[in-house]
Image (cartoon, rainbow over all chains, first blue to last red; front, side, top):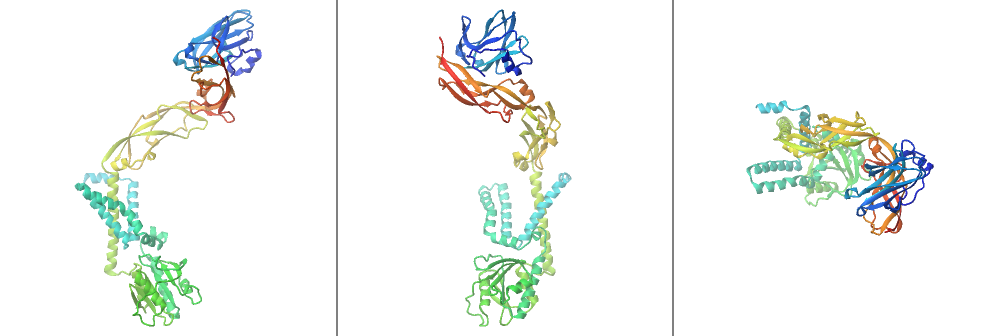
Length: 135
Length: 478
């Protein structure tokens, strides 16, 4: 598991590194070039990338950036609290490149480990981000 | 009368065997220990116990307490005070005679051997000194004996007292059909009224007879006389028949004829009857006393499970058994005597339903099963598989407000575990045990165990149970 803070460059080869996470490979015409959990988005860029969110901060944000995006398409941010699905957020990507984010409001009952799966419309996984919600 | 007939008709063959065995054991105790002081004390204690029961039923509080105390000490007193007597009884007999023999054939044949040997030594004027212990222990009186522990035989006795044998001057201690020790030194009598022709051998024989209840036979080297020392008296015995009688009387094998023999037979029959009646009474009071109902909560045990499968869940972990039996039996039930076992040999992966039948339940004898709740148990089984899963840190606690945990990695990233297929198919992530944030440095390394939840999960061989966590914190941009 790598930090959500690090700006990760994903290539087609990255998909091959995680063949076990999906039944088939995600749409390779779009490339995920950045994915991070962060506290906020300012000017289209993630602020304070972190792997731990205190419920006092109230919000957890999942940021993703794709380049290139040859044609309009959709991706999903699927939020899991432990292994239980919590939210499935549909995001539309537009050419030629696109950054998007989703967020959840943090409550006391959200304390614990989380993950966000970034998938295409078929459920194929581009990347998984892991973080914890604490007191 | 009807009740009695009902009780008798309800007896199982096991109950008959039960009563017969205990009666026989009691009878064996009587046969082995009859005539001993320990037996008399035991009878006394039984009588005391009877009076204690009477005292309890009459409400005599202090009396029943006192008798109870005495009875409680009884067994201890018998073993401590009469340990030598008990040992003598057991040592003097072989295993067969302890468990089976009612006669004293061994002793009779031993007596014949002794009489024959003594007669031969008398004829040959071969000096001899033979000691036959009574009920008292001779350990502190007889000294310097050489342990022998050999079977009694005519040849052995003759060779022990053969003049060239180094131990021929000492005494041979004979018990039952065994020569226990030879060359033993006996205490000398200090009496001054003994005839002058009695030498040291006779003084030794009398000395032991004066201090103990042992019988001693001395064979004179000069005249060939056979002298028996017993109860501070020396008596010359000229006839083999008389010597045999003396030995029989001493060893409790007195030849009983006519009335005496009949009396002994009657005593034996009475003892047998008392054993049977006593055992039957105890048996009925224990197993057919006032019926008591009890409900026990018993854990379920599973047997014959396919090793390739594991139990995932059960509808219950314990069942309530409604049991009935006499108060004494119900009170004496131990947890390990009551078991409920379900046979999983025919189970399959997935949910299984089992009925708890009397065959699944083992109970102590005399306890009857009246009901089971619940009578049906759902058991879910799963096939064991291996699965490799990513490990995620389960952070807890609180970082200082101006810090964020910028980066954290786990090594190894994935761990292989073994568990039920249906369970592992749903699992996507393994978590570490709780890792506190409160004491983190700017950056550092921690270790944590992988939390296995549920506990039936196991780390696969070759996989790490403990992972290394590397982390970096930094100041938050405001």
